[in-house]
Image: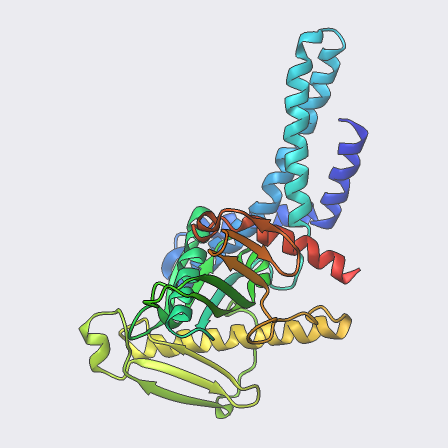
Length: 359
């Protein structure tokens, strides 16, 4: 194997603790082979997600090892047969791609980066346009998740009477879901000709996105129930007639932090309460992570405020079509392509930007 690839591979093996991850991967696969593995569906699903997250790292590393061996053999053959030069070039290009992927994954090293993500959207300034915009973003993140074969579950949805949503929460489960999406927290600004304005005037609207890690039940997050106010109410929006006939929806308010979460997706109040507590644990874990990071460095000094001048990303449909991240400068010229879920470029550029901010 060429020296530069060999050195890079050794570096990534160290960064990812490759041998330890392979041992963990084999242990999980052994556990999954147990006849009673699926008896507890929720715990089993969490284990499957954990395995996928591990394989998302070990897979590319193993591929790189194999590609390196193949390249070494091809280089020896190329010394004797010049016609193999094109194959060598293609193999080098493949190695470069895998290295770039590993470089990006090496940035996903936060305490909860491998976890699933709970993503909450709220319409802000802009009237009905803001409600419509929040729903557009909900579809965008759902499309991104589906393109990456992630699982999406609706936790809560509060529809606006005229159009769009007032708020919604979804769980996105897949390898490194939180690690990729955590940079989406902040204000998202849309500029367009309003479809809700008969005069066809340009409208600026805002939607707030908040992303928290979905914490495993195995991780201890202490919540004193005496610190939590619980309200039940009738669910609104989609969900069938039965949902709206009983006080099945649950809202939790954690008084020490002011965190409020709610869930109304299930018909059972018990299930909604369990999910709401899970969302609360996730939010408190996120607050702890931010606190730890803030003590090490001011990593969140640019966290978005509400309203003009505070947005992390601008989406334009008028006068031209483009989307630009206010932090990284990364931009795409196809608005509809972005809204169709092709946001990976923004997620990747944010990860690299964070490294530069932390230096």
